[in-house]
Length: 262
Image (cartoon, rainbow, N blue to C red; front, side, top):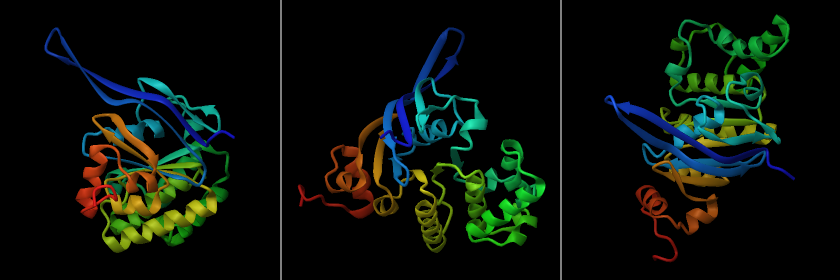
């Protein structure tokens, strides 16, 4: 049986002109391949500049890959085909303040994807918006609020609602819980896990928080300078890290000692 998400040799290079004759290239993501099944969570970790956020944007269709392929349910995703992709893969960005248009009410923000991608009637769209607001722990009345009227945790719930509004199969979350305090972060994590169980969602979770990754992810990709240096089941990688970077990340978070070193 094939996986929900299959990534084959996904690659991203940026080319720059330096002066009149000199060109420079940066390999932001070196060829990476992996699979993810429905109901699974993949963590992408690495230090700043490792390429993890670029990989997340490639998966969500925000950036165009230089080469490689992305398949969802055996259907290849093509860059620019937002009609297909946005019903299957949605993204939650790190900063809800910049991701939500301050000039639009929450209801209009959530209704936008429905207007562009469905043939739903205005009444049906309003009903879906109210349902999704309640499902993420907000009130139907929040549809009439502007983003700046909401607290940080509420804004991130709106971002989650926008990601869910088209009932996708995969959600890519790029450091989405970073700006929240511990209490709000725990609430959001519990909500994400509930929704995963309820809807069979697959998550791609970009983070440096090894404690969260240990408890909520099934698989892990460790990146350094655009390259995957370790990939496997989260429990196995945490128990026996092979790459020096993985060990360093674990050490810095847990003051970690693996069985081999203790």
